[in-house]
Image (tube, rainbow, N blue to C red; front, top):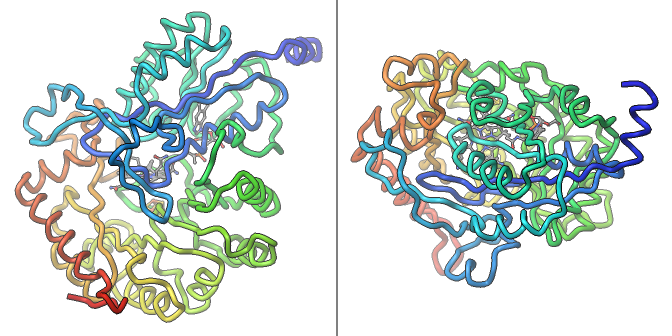
Length: 452
Ligand code: B12
Ligand code: SF4
């Protein structure tokens, strides 16, 4: 674009709507969900576009009626309001109810209709199997903002670009390749700008990423094909982001990093060191919804994390079966997991906030789910079943093509594969076992945690 075009673009600020769609699924819970990719992109448009955000999953925006009966915990997580939704025909053999989660469609339509005519609507996409929410948003935009160009970006747009294009948007952005977006919008990104958090009138939970990518190659994960290189983000900028979040009232911060503990000497440790010197140190709880690699939790690391404000620790254990661990990428082995748990507890972490993620419904079928659950439980930590989602392009996802249509993203739903692999009754039994094991970790009246 030449100088004249840039000037024209700056003179007439385009109007941009930012949308996080609702979720259509068997279950959904606010596990510190924020449209962080969209907010980062929008931040780069600050000052050159008029923007407004509608986050269908913003629990602070739910009406008092919608909030009735919804549980939330003291870590910033909570339930979404939901209504029954028609179950897609291909799920007829899945004995679970299907629902729509998030702010109502009427609320979104009213909001859209109240906006002055928009030039662009940027839509956050996340799980591939959540595209029904994206499609619904697009239908409403086409009807109520007919002039606007629709752009899809994020995980679904990246992992299923052909399918995303079949929904009929004007542009699909792949991964972090944002050049096509800037030329489509005729704008020049301001890469130093912080994410567009001002889009939220009220904010309790924030998100941060200290690095991009992951050096590991787990065979069930898409990150190796999308972001195979580990690249630390600028530390000062991350601290600026956190300053801003704290000023806006955030008290819970979730890291969306794929490999938060990798090269901690360069990334996490200097960050925590700087955080400890901030006037607000101690006021913000840090959370790790994405699995941490237990291999990197040394005694010093555990101490630094607990002292730095980490409250929840989700460790990607996946399975205690050595052969399974080895053939899926050797991310972590049993002895490394046990050691990490010990170090965290010695450093003062509350064991009820240490969680072992265990994969269930993996196509190889030999990960000994129950034995893995009991082994993690015996260490006195919570267990959480991570239901396998087959992702196109990954070795394990591709191995499912013989029994599901991988080109239809609804089949990637995490509820589906475990039921197809193990049967609904077995999945139910394992979930019940998970519940029982975790309940036995509750403290007694004296506040003492016992392992049952
Ligand atoms: C954080 C995270 C979570 C969070 C929730 C995230 C959310 N907002 O919903 C938690 C921990 C809850 C979670 C849970 C799960 N997750 Co997850 N998660 C991620 C992670 C690490 C980041 C996703 C994200 O928010 N990205 C947005 C930002 C942070 O990404 P970014 O790349 O930095 O953004 C850049 C570009 O992508 C682009 N961009 C991003 N968004 C947008 C939007 C627009 C409009 C534009 C133009 C550009 C753009 O611009 C940015 C440039 O700076 C991804 C892995 C990954 N690296 O993407 C897996 C990932 C999405 N998760 C995955 C899986 C498997 C799961 C689980 C099924 C695991 C399990 N078995 O329990 C569950 C499912 C939960 C559910 N309810 O169904 C898979 C995808 C599965 C699928 N079929 O879609 C991924 C890809 C990881 C993997 N294994 O390959 N997850
Ligand atoms: S360590 Fe995590 S992010 Fe990296 S490849 Fe394995 S599962 Fe994916």
